[in-house]
Image 1: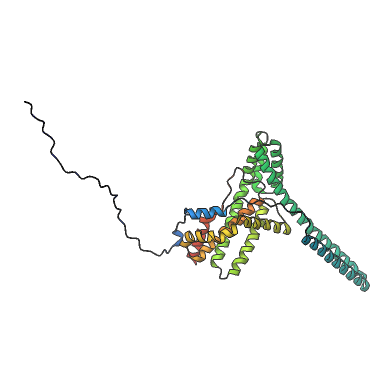
Image 2: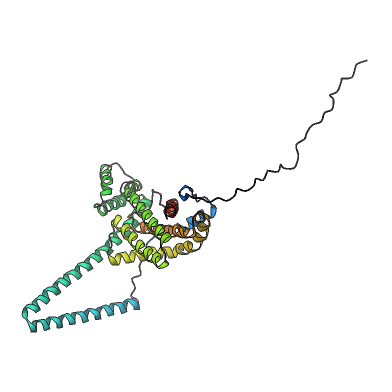
Length: 354
């Protein structure tokens, strides 16, 4: 008769609970005052802030084609200008006749001064016409460069690069790039590669200067907005800085417009911002989202300076799009959000020193 095996004695075990473990809730940290604002690190990593900055960089600026039809306003302007010119000519003729009646030398002096006046006016008109022609040349170069790059047309790319070298011949920053292009002229066969090489060698140094111009201008606007006592001062300085930035950007890329060309370029920049809704974005979405995110760590006045600096940066980037002889094909286009950290640090330094 066999013996039955001895079984294992029963024991008690702790089974894992089916309820999730409750995490200990720590007491919130008491708020503290930050004495040194320069130590505050600002990161625009919030989803709403990123959306706001992306809306600020909706799309690159493009010049709108001008309408050449004769409108009633243009007809009235031409007629009024012609009448004013006739009235001025009759007044000068009457003045010269009266001076001849008094003394011959006075009449001849008036004729000489009139000739000098005509030469000066002719020079101004010629300068304005050449400035408008340079703007058209830059626009045509940008359009032809994009077409040659997309079609991979070697002949068209060669012509585009030759015109680009001529346009930027007086810029010392492009001397090394022009020499590099002359070196590799027979080695690059594809049209797309030739345009990409020209963009990298000729425009990359100018792009660095353009970014520096935009950063400096946006910082000035941000600081002045933060410290100025009245809104009229802000408005006047922003207008002055905008025109100054657009002119500097056009001269950097070889456009060098006159007064009429600068007015047209400024109009194109503002029209692009209005069409893409950048102005409304800056007034509502940026002011609310970035104001509650980045600017909330500063003061309300400094937050307004950051917003105005961002809008100035967007204006500078739009001017960069319109003045650059080639579109951004292989080089990454800068964005207004790239200047956010510098603007916030600059305003924080202003608050700390103030």
